[in-house]
Image 1: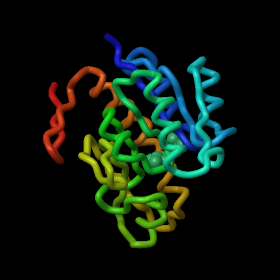
Image 2 (image 1 turned 180 degrees about the vertical axis):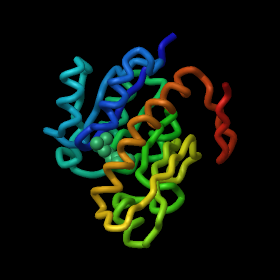
Image 3 (image 1 turned 60 degrees about the vertical axis):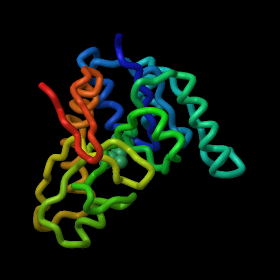
Image 4 (image 1 turned 30 degrees about the vertical axis):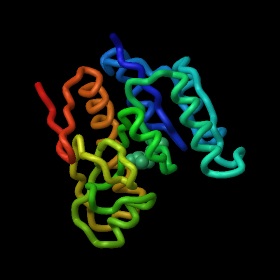
Length: 198
Ligand code: GRF
């Protein structure tokens, strides 16, 4: 049986595109792309690929709890085996992350530089190597078990945009690779430790 995947986005959606570009090799079917913001590039990418979309815009709800419930209901309607956060910039509640396996891609080598400004923070710190992480999502921000990481070298004269472009290039291979491993049942989680079987 093919895994059913829901992808959550907030923006440009280049990571979503990398999942779409894998086609059948992804090993699962993206049944819906849901954004917390209207009019973002990622929604157009989904439209072009004929993937159903949904918008659960944060601003349309009176408070965080109501928005979270609306999002969770929309995802639940898809009966997903996996939820992928591909540039989704909001924190999900415990009820959500304990209900389905949730994978996130983050532009740093976690646990260094969690949060929304990972690339800027890494450069400001003066690191010479940063990178990207694919991890399972738990109740804490950018905290769950690490599935895979790839390092990216910081070059003299880099501005936050330049390493982020290089990091995204790596993300576009790593995220689909991890989703495929998940869909093929090759990922086991034991506490903080992830094992990938061949
Ligand atoms: C990526 O760098 C990802 O690591 C971070 O947000 C960015 C999303 O980019 N969580 P895109 O919308 O996939 O182009």
